[in-house]
Image 1 (cartoon, rainbow, N blue to C red):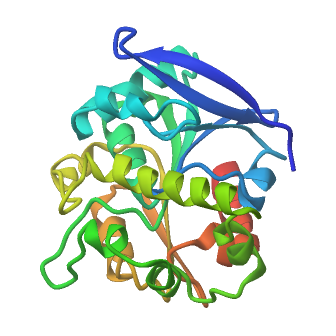
Image 2: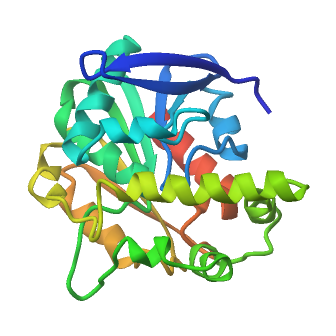
Length: 267
């Protein structure tokens, strides 16, 4: 695994600091994590072989900074905070990628900061909504640990899934791991509760960057019908479906995801 460095960037006129994890060399790539929080996995490590990868903690989820979530009131605060973050990192041109909750934020940011986004990759994003394919924040926030495993993953026994979802040894460490996971779900849900339809459908046409939408064919959390919905909503997009994969492609189909996204971003 790469050695990560951290950088703290003031945003929103200095009212909030965002902690960013950085690794790799090359052109910049910003990755926005899912509602489950920051986790440096094999996929990000592979990306860092080709790009300088920036992964910000969503406010309130960085270690030691839980109360930062009080400085974010809504989705628009978040989009402007990330807009300030790109400026603070001096990233004039960037490849932008987001997973699930982070995919929604990436789409919003690409619609807001069009001139800066060279390529956009959305991995099972939330943010659009169809009455015939409903989901709410409770679809992942109100689940027991066994239900989370059953809902998120096509193969809960996959080694990368087991590694990600197994608490550290020791009762105190395991309890803190669980508290942080639940807190992170709460922080991200604050800006999208109860239904993550906050108007992206009215703004997504503004995205000008070539876009890749990736979805697991066996996603039980956000129905795969949304892959085509995002594909139709983006002006210049490609949809890529992953077999034998649930809502976590970076864990369940890392190699296929890596190969497809690296080829897309390099083209």
